[in-house]
Amino acid sequence: MNSKFKKKAVFLVTFMMLLVLATTVLLNWSVVEEKFLGKKSVPAATQNFENETSEEATEEEPLVKYEDSFHADGFAGADPSMQAGENLKAFLDDNTFFDRELSDYEKLILQETDFGLYLMVTSVEHDMRIQVVDNEGTIITGIPFQLHVKDVGSYKDHDRDGVIYIGDLKAGNYEVSMDEVEGFEIPVPAMVHVKEKVEYTAISDITLLMKTEEDIVVTKEDTEVREALNDVDGTEITDLQEVGDASQLGIDVSKYNGAIDWDKVRNAGIQFAIIRAGYRGSSTGALVEDPYFRQNMQGAIAAGLKVGVYFFTQAVNEVEAVEEASMVMNLCQDYKLTYPIFIDTEGAGGDGRADNLSVQDRTDVCKAFCETIESANYTAGVYASRNWFNNRLYMADLDKYVTWLAEYREKPEYGGKYQFWQYTSSGYVDGMEGRVDLNISYLMY
Image 1 (tube, rainbow, N blue to C red):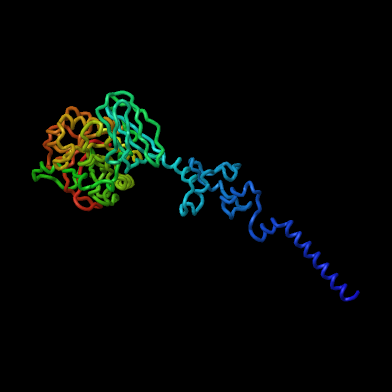
Image 2: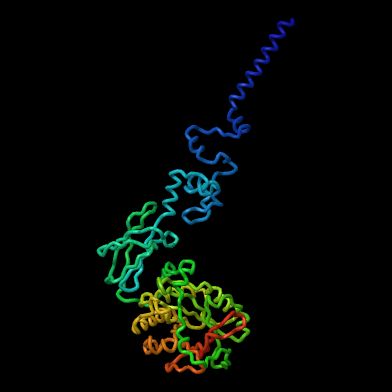
């Protein structure tokens, strides 16, 4: 074979090999994309769907891991038979979701679930309390909601606290609705039955009115004044008394006593503690939990002391008294009480909202509180000074409840019957800093 022919043969073979290779590459281009470029060829009809999902998704690692997701309808996990795309909120599982601009669709999904409003309407006596809450029961504040009571009138939430109170209503059924608010899904109208007469039963939604001291101006609200200090005669006993087998020795405490070593208190001879659950604000009437209530309850019970509870009232009517009793029972539901629940009725410096109540109105407040407490099978009682019992209450109307007398002298001069005696506010007990209220119970629990 001459050299010229040999060169042509080599060229022809080489060309054919290249042609075969090129054909193979073209026929297997999808394989090359998948294996060498990390891409997967898809039909044109599904390309838009694939582009909206994670580019890192593979057959071995599905886009949505249903067993790990938590769905907006409140159910953890999902049906394994579901296919990718059926979980409309899968984008919430994306770690970068809140770092990017949301699509209109995503915003719509969130709005439909997270921004619904609900009207909670209750009545105690010739009144209604309307509360605007979210789907978790939290009051929505900061918005001047406009509400309407059919055939009665319209009411605006001027202070934007999410609560509107309407009094002086006739008993009967009413429909409550609300104007549209931008960014929220407006609730359907609510129906409420306005009661003819107060019922001494716990208010189920009382937690919506309960506050902590972080929500108020404490110096304006917690202004209780010890009326018994106006009646001292110099014979007050400040030592721990020997009580014998027919009575028991105890203390009453609040946030003002600070942290307490309850084991030392028990070892000092204290047998029971009456613990302040909270108070109604002297200025605004807010229902406020004592910041040491839970700590004191848990500590006293763990140390083996018997416990009771008291609440400082500034209620101006029976409705508010029922609210106060409802709050106390809500706070006490996780604890075993041995001693009574007392309403503490004293002054608040002369300008408290309840300081100038008539004797009858104040008596009605105490009775409503105690009746509500006893309707739930607790024992109820009234705390006050000798002067308060003598001149600010009709004790004949409160005779059925436990009486807790505050009188700081060697022997009380109060002529009525009493079962508890707070004999000093200047006692000292190991395990506590500063002065302590000391009490004797003549009831054996």
